[in-house]
Length: 429
Ligand code: AAL
Image (cartoon, rainbow, N blue to C red):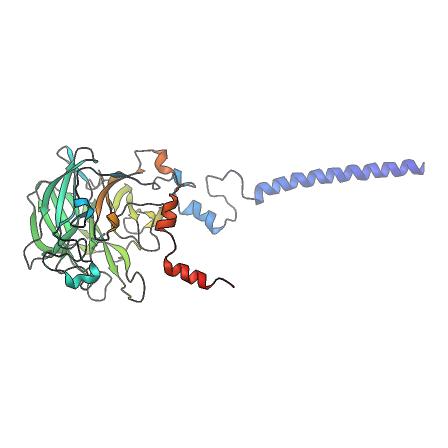
């Protein structure tokens, strides 16, 4: 009898233990559902504690994945046909293209063109520059233009805006132009140099020329339309890369300043971008009180996008390698992070001047490669393609896995001799 009672007790105990174990497993599964971050990422921001990084995924970006983000894209490059560069000896340069526009059944692009008897001596030797020897790659340049039926093969048409006679602004060099179409007329804004770049820096304001047709003739106003800021201000010496768009019935001119020159640092300067707004192409342009409005980037490349404006931000600053967006055209935020961005890009922006209320974006344009042929004072134009457009959905452009050839790592990004020395001196013996 005693034996019987004990086995009943054991059975009851075992059964209740088993039941407890099962309910514990069910509970942890439930807990996992509520406490662990789920396997399928919620499309809406979940109402639960989130790390800063995951919260940012919901708050800062359009989607959880770059490939679902309209302002994310790769950039693909195609060599242009139709331009000769004297075998890259540095006597011919083409750089800093404008936006591309479509008029009279063809595409137009304007750019800094230099054809000089000798290659530039370089900015650091600017004192050796003369009336025929350029200092920088963009010294002693004129504004040239080319047209194309397909965007791949171009025909150079000649000089659109030459250097004006001394002492008009730009007598030393007219460079880095961009185009505006406004009430049936065309306006080219450009950097107007009055000294060889490198003498004191890369100092210049912006001047403007206008024409009734993109083929000219261009009338250089000889006036400074976007002046340098007052002494002590960020843009007191350099107003670079003027870039006009039409918004709210006005001309929104973005531009770059390089400033904060501190010789003890490398690079010694910082670059940011500002905005100036005008009701008339010849000004006055009123600089925005919040300038600079973009904290990074080397050249200006912007396009109307949805209700706001988007910017390709490359090369310089904390936020280089990003595409940014400002719904109010002033306060920019990072929309996507990407690689191999086009440098000095002049995109084809079909709605640049239509005062669109809903910008559609861009798919291609012309940019440049500096240090072409391993020569710092020689630059070539190139074509870039991308999918930063609401009208195009190109999965290939949305990939974000890059492989570079080993040579790129070992040759372009190998350790320098002094780095190797530093590392070897610290090897423990
Ligand atoms: C460019 C631009 C401006 C600078 C120089 C020529 O890429 O930012 O144009 O002055 O470099």
